[in-house]
Length: 171
Image: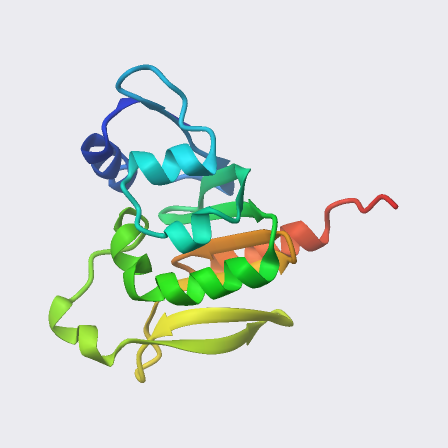
């Protein structure tokens, strides 16, 4: 999927109006000056994201994609697992707002009941923004010590885990 000539405002509108997809699709972005948004730092700058404690440890490569009808995901490579995880914990208070384009409309009146929790999903440690009713908004986990994934869907997270686990391994 290609989103061309985007401002940060038009990007949010276009991403929310993506047509339904089958399977996983990668999204490529070009800003309104014609420059590709193809590095993690250019992506964070493009959207004015506040996660500076995380971004300094992210490598250049990242992927923005959609799984199925409306579940977006981000995958980042990282150079320092410990620092990135610590930065993610710091970013949790802003993560949902900074990446709001990824998540379904929410009931603002119900915000106080959502909190971050530790979880195990497919034998991987994960952090989930959820409430005591079992509703969840944001998931993040590490596929390995160098790969961070953020999404709004447990199904997408498990699909990415499965896809990652089945990739060929060369020693």
